[in-house]
Length: 156
Image 1 (tube, rainbow, N blue to C red):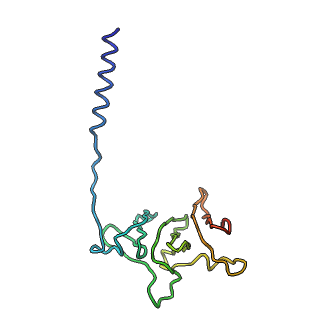
Image 2: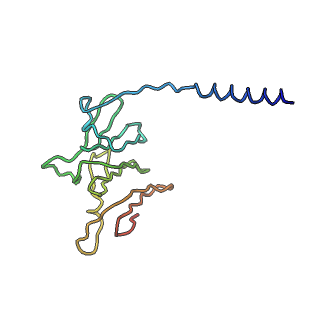
Image 3: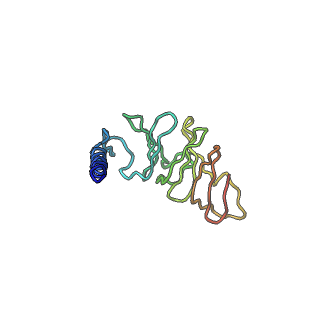
């Protein structure tokens, strides 16, 4: 009886040690502004439904196809509704739009096909001149986006 218990314990320890030595094979590459990234400070990232990687940085959003970066940001004099290039969060909805939360607590919708930004606060009407301060973007399980504000409630 004692020998069978010892055999079980030794077998268990052997199995644990075999599993602990397993490692995943992965390739790690480091990208910087020298490689085309708009800023070295990356705040968020997602992989979209087409397979592109999107990085929110302190200087715009960057689309990466595995080889090259394309930078989207507001530039002085352009007609973009993006008012702050520091992007802190990115969410993709079911329609393929990217929803961006910028450092100024504003939400922008980026149309990847038209390559245009839409300031959500410009589309909402508030009582008086109250500025919307967004806290969170929540993509519901059935598709719609919920935008949580600091003092004005939640928008669907």
